[in-house]
Amino acid sequence: MNYSKKNSMMDSESSAPVKAKEYLSNNVTATSGKHYLCGCCAAFTNIAITFPIQKVLFRQQLYGLKTKDAVRQLQKDGIRNLYRGILPPLMQKTTTLALMFGLYEDFSSLLHSHTNAPELITCSMAAVLAGTTEAVLTPFERVQTLLQDYKHHDKFTNTYQAFKVLKVYGVREYYRGLVPILLRNGPSNALFFGLRGPIKQCLPEATSYSTHLVNDFICGGLLGAMLGFLFFPVNVVKTRMQAQIGGEFQSFSKVFVKIWLERDRKLIHLFRGAHLNYHRSLLSWGIINATYEFLLKLS
Image (cartoon, rainbow, N blue to C red; front, side, top):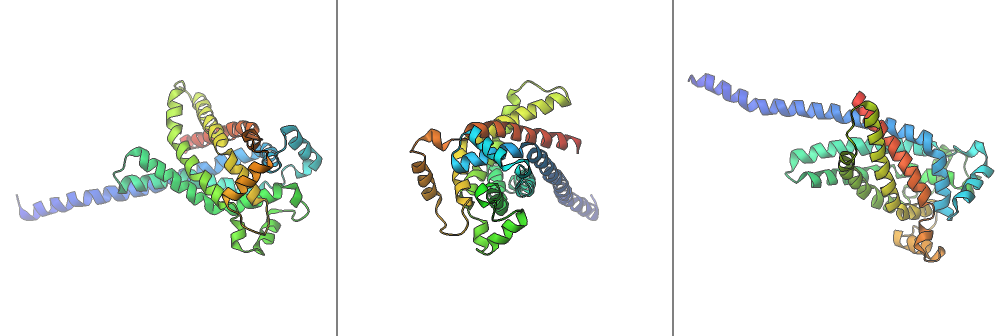
């Protein structure tokens, strides 16, 4: 064989993997972009539907109220205040879920291409990393807590004002409650992405768009309800920590013990509102997962 021809063939062969990598990189970027957009739209749909339920649950978490008392409190506030505080969760959730689904895909691709670790480990690590990154948006969750607490109704009337008031206390004040958010986000993401596939496989085989939609709703709803219940006490501590403005930054354990003593050291009191959270999560994550998968199929 002619030497120059052989050289040319070798160059062609060596450049093939490079071109393949470039194509794969471009393809992954385009694909992950869809996941960000679909996650954002799924979150918007969910918040618009479930916000009033979330508000009842919030009152129970913060004050340990029974469901009927929390509903009466909202009725007393009036219809005008029902959607008060919706902007922070709308901004936070649309961005959070866009990051949750999009970063999970990005981190998964990155870890798969740079490590030889088993699928379960890489996927779990990608989910934890995505959940940890989401914690950057803690200020939105912080402001949502303040706007939903009736004790702060006279202090600020909107999201901008709440952010402005917190600014006086410094950047750290925006991130009050960060520890419980980190304790919740990473592990819950790992369980959600790890169990989503296996649960769907256990459901009857889908043969149409509508049955796929139902299966995705059931799968997301069951996972959301289970994880919402599992991490409910963490959210109770987070809510208590974020309802405070200024003053000492108490540790997660200190706030937990304080709540535990206030509620007569009874586990059932710590889970007050968990049944409503279960049903809200069932509906909420059912909507999110079904909307996300539906939009993903359309794109």
